[in-house]
Image 1 (cartoon, rainbow, N blue to C red):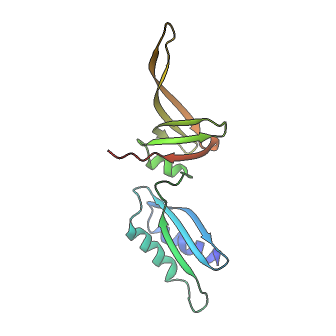
Image 2 (image 1 turned 90 degrees about the horizontal axis):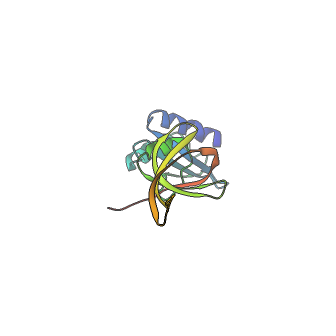
Image 3 (image 1 turned 90 degrees about the vertical axis):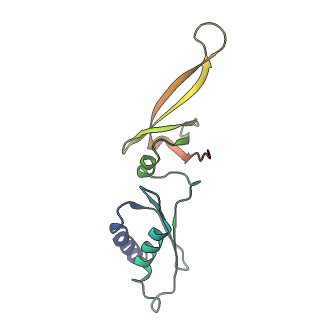
Length: 154
């Protein structure tokens, strides 16, 4: 069943190039769960189109199944480079494999890494007090344990 669902899913996604797969889960009870993201977000209509592409090509007489197609939640961690790219300009909170936590604005991405920039208060090099400094780091995805977009309401 997984092979058939994967093929149908890939065909449906080919018709919607701005969408991409985050996760496909099929349980022993044939509960199919598809999680999508999109370069421009995911609309309800997008989920319906992908759902139809799968559901209309599986025979319920032959196989009893349930199907759920959803968008990746705003609180879900980022898992793919394509997700980082669509969030350029937003603030990201990252936990690295070295135990560091970095919170900064995404200013650039490549297929291998993400660039974050932020302001930090540090002691003055000479004298007392602190000074605000601009920080920047290029972080390879392979060093990221978890990355979440920080949602802000203005």
